[in-house]
Amino acid sequence: MTCARITFEVPLATVNTSNRREHHMQRHRRAKGQRDATNLLWPGWSGPALLVVRLTRVSPRALDSGDNLPISMKSIRDEVARQLRLDDASPLVRWVYAQAHGAPSVLVELSWGDDPLAAAVRAQDALAPPPPPVPPAAVASRAPRERKSKAPKKAPSRPLRGLAALAMPASYPGKKP
Image (cartoon, rainbow, N blue to C red):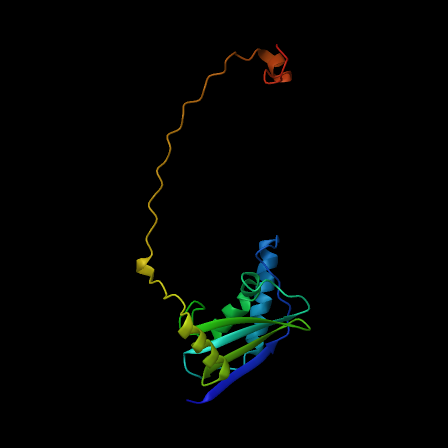
């Protein structure tokens, strides 16, 4: 096998969208901008299907590597998978995330064969292999929920008496009409 790697940098800032409260169109415009920037800088791909993709977020501040780091680069991951003509959940691609300090950008590395990055991921998978993909037919469909019967409405304890009842409802404590 030969050692091979493709590396390119996308100069854009990423944000953690899991805790962000924003309008859905603003989120859409940001994601589309990230996908378009990745598409413009895409160098092309002609390698084998089994590969490792490392996305390195370069930013002045670090994110939590468990949840927030992968979420911040979801649009870039989607575009890389689209360019590879694969689903981003495909078992043929192993996604690895990293962080570095510097001016905001994302470094994309594709690695396969005997490349040190691909070899390191294969060694890590040998120690703790990732869970196998779940086939769509194996996912159990949810049983329909049983509907609760509606309780009959209670009749008011005293009838309302004209406009006075509207001006001073009987629900005020201590007030009697």
